[in-house]
Length: 117
Image (cartoon, rainbow, N blue to C red):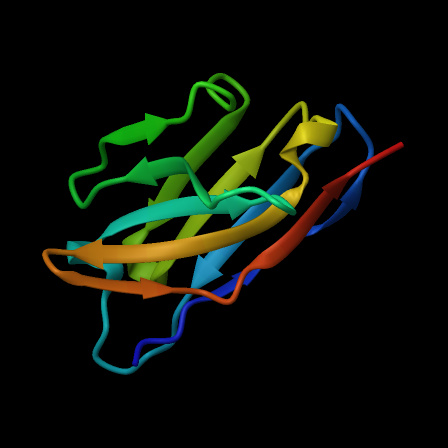
């Protein structure tokens, strides 16, 4: 099973920024051929797609984060990032990384992001 590890979460005030990272050091595994995505799940809510970057570099964003969040990938480092600007209290959630290709998907364990004054 491939291990994806998220990092970079924390407690910030509204309007501040965070950058999340999702990396794997799994031998023989390369994110290059995978579509990479960030999801989030707030307490009492369903997990939702936040942003996706496919293997070709095309991106998709949920309407709620468009213009504030940026997803990027560094295939050489086997890492995907989520830069989150202008954070709002409603962005508070556990953020999960996902690697997907055909019928295969791998998830990380999540990192907590809390936006509060």
